[in-house]
Image 1 (cartoon, chains in turn brown, blue):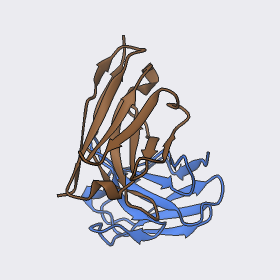
Image 2 (tube, one colour; image 1 turned 30 degrees about the vertical axis):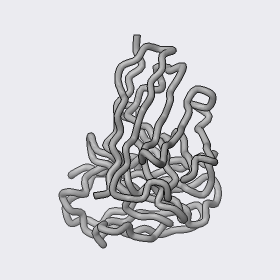
Image 3 (spheres, rainbow over the protein chains, first blue to last red; image 1 turned 90 degrees about the horizontal axis):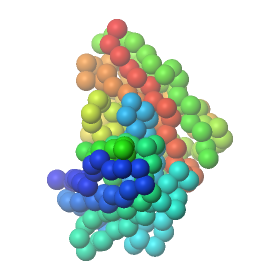
Image 4 (cartoon, rainbow over the protein chains, first blue to last red; image 1 turned 180 degrees about the vertical axis):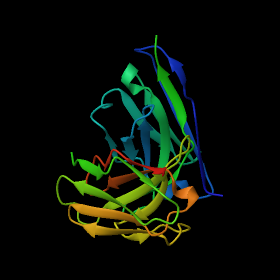
Length: 119
Length: 107
């Protein structure tokens, strides 16, 4: 079945780094734009970054620009988020999500992976 | 960035009630408005896309309407499984942005 599974979350100290992965299955991964979306504890949803199907177009939220890098490996059906210079305010559950295409909406979500930034 | 404002922030209702949640955009977003349902500890689930199109598999008691800046999500007859938090999201421009959420609780 169509599925996204995130991994790589954990506890990291401020200023540290973490790399999240998202494994896709059940659909042609290379056909879809993908995004990372996060949710701080008890808070709402915040879009973080997206990458086009080929990887040629990338956008970031201002809150992570210059610190986070999104990438994908279509041969491995995988999406990644490299997070550097982590801050306490980056603490959140991170979801990968598939964009259904025009008109855009996030139609498939992973279960999420928790990132905690604390000393 | 386009700001999305939902009202109310929380709502108490009973099984069988008709419920409406409103979402307002800070500028016109045409019909590029999506609705999601999120239950505690779970990922969001797409309910409605493009303001009024029902996502496959979503019960027909959910409906969406609106265009421009004002949108509504209506649940025609609340079921026990509908008690959750609902988010609107605009996909008109990057960055896409979400409303703050509406928590629907059992009365």
